[in-house]
Length: 191
Image (tube, helix red, strand yellow):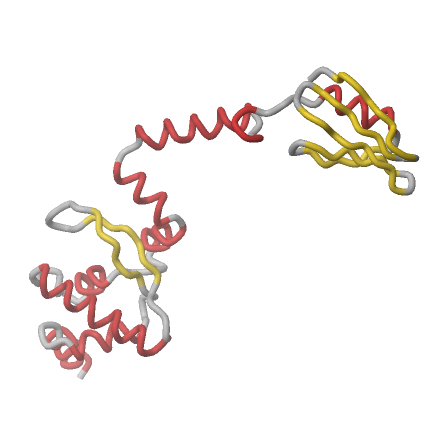
């Protein structure tokens, strides 16, 4: 950036005109402040503030540094070329990692553990609705959601994830008539 003019306005107050715009340099105590177009910095001397102003490069596209703009462009390009599974994994973030590690489970995982994985998709979906209703009744807020691929259609759907021993999972089993038999079988095995 080319410095065209520096004008002293008052004691400790200067106005600097450059090809990129007008900046002010003011003194507060022992510190000189350079303020202007997307820049606010403090310096020990007036000479250092003027040198910084001469070295300042205008940024493209509304103030974003060129290097950052390139990083964002590369990130967007990488996102456009990734697989669908990776996109949804990234959208879910840490919740997807917790589901993968078993720290959180989905209702379908619970049914598979209890031997109800062969239930129709509609029954499994309704079981999930009963569990979510029980969770909201107990906690006053909805459970965390995670993107998962549907087991038969392959579409990506947003499903709830719970703690493995969450009470709502078992309340949903007992309140939904299509899954009651899974709970009764477990009680009979214990007896």
